[in-house]
Image (cartoon, rainbow, N blue to C red):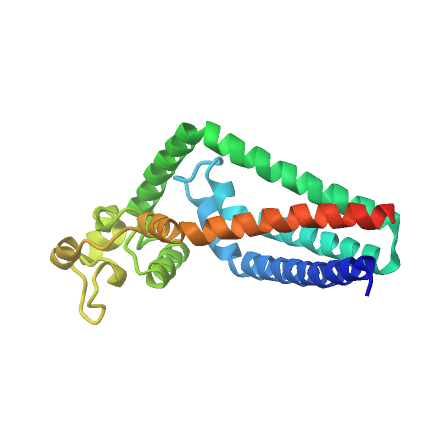
Length: 240
């Protein structure tokens, strides 16, 4: 088997996988969007969530867009290699090159504006805490969303149990969310929540990212390597 045939087979295999991954990503994004409409509606109707904050919860659109780009890229690469279509191969190269440049730009901007990112996170922390304090236990949709999030991530509030101190639920029942106490079979009162002091959901997420930083970095390096290899192979096939 010639080198050209090997490259074509590799292009077909890799891009078929990319096409399938893109399709799955689009489907997952659509399902999340459909099931999350009630949560987004509650957040949009909340007087404490500013217009700048709401788009953070609309990331499903980005997920769908990324999946669509992956599916298109996989289709172009697979068909371009099979049919030896130079137009498809060139479009494929341009799409990957554009994605590569965008990733580099985003990475550089993040490194240059880390301080602004920290300020944004602090503002986010304040707004979410305020929303919990004024709506938890009163807005059923928002309450259910937080309960499911805390149960899934094994955390308590955005910061910790203090987010709920002046919330409608605590004022009316003197009880905190079950997730704020490890013994969920018993009622979670202030004493138990204070003594256990479970970690907030934001810190839990950051801790997961920190503990899996090697995995995250490895995936990023793998993606970049695949992109560079795909660009090289597409150019080789284009010139044949």
